[in-house]
Image (tube, rainbow, N blue to C red):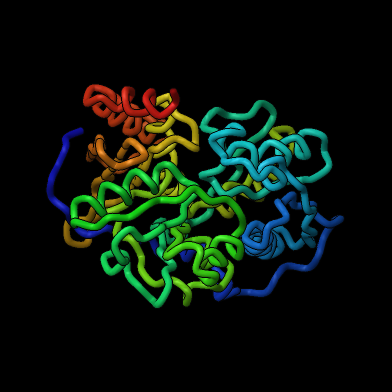
Length: 349
């Protein structure tokens, strides 16, 4: 594995991500068996994501799928995620429902899942990833570089705050990142009311709920690296439910699985939680029409953006999950050698 400064084109696999406008292809098979119970959070975004997966599972299995709404602690608490244990608080209730047999499978935003495996549960599928970028929604249709001096930019993510502040400083901008919580409507409402000049959200979520037209700027990946796993979904079921796990595997996209495995391996090796100021993205690199390498980029920074550790590594396209895990661990080792642990420790104090 060698670090490379070059930037070949990113290759896109042929399978489409789960989207509302997806071509349904052939019709569903005749219904067979009782409905499958899909556990989901109650938010509009979670329901939209789960609905897309439910449609695909119906097509694969020929069985009806019913959504079971589950309220998580992360949904009811108004405290900042860093105060209540990170984004893993969104997954716990769903996982407990799976283990109790109250639902047959569950859908998560992958970036919400802790990196440690859960006993008794199987990550049955990681469907094709949506757009991993962060998106700006600003007043008056402004792009990030056009924000006024001292603009108030809302985000609940230390990772975003670190990179946005660093990017602003590099370009002579003066912004103030403001911690916020809430669903998509709540966050965009801060802009509509004039309380904030802009908010930053995951582009994937806006696409999935049909609100792409409200995006005023898509932040380049060279400017803001996403959270590990951002834009990807995770489909979990009980390990003992072997037949269902095999059926759900039909949703799995190997490229996405390898990419997010590398990203989450980096996060785990840094011993950081999913609310840490860590950005990561793995993508395929092509030489002409031949895809032959995977690049993994990572960043860790202080919330004010004054210090960032940014590294990348390039290696052969993984042929196994072990290969992807090794790529993440190698990049983590390089970042730790450059002082990444000190930045995360500073933030945790």
